[in-house]
Length: 78
Image (cartoon, rainbow, N blue to C red; front, side):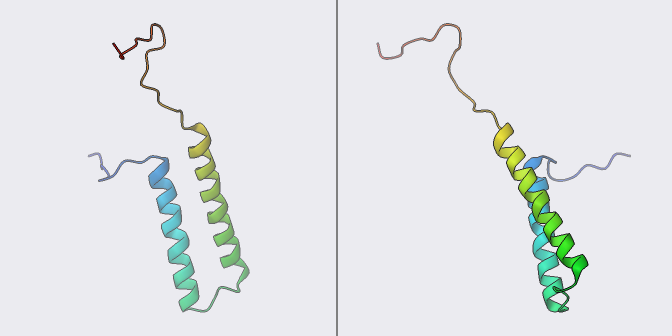
């Protein structure tokens, strides 16, 4: 039996999961007053750098879609 997720796994959903994880960690660490611990700082910095890496990959690898013919462009102004 194959498990199917209700949302597609792509770069945008991965980045959204990183943002949600960072937000939840900040809230939980703030409630329990453990933001000064080194492991929490390492975890938050690592997730933030992972988010920055994913964002840069999305921005630099996204190709511009052009809706024009490459071989024989036509003029529609007639």
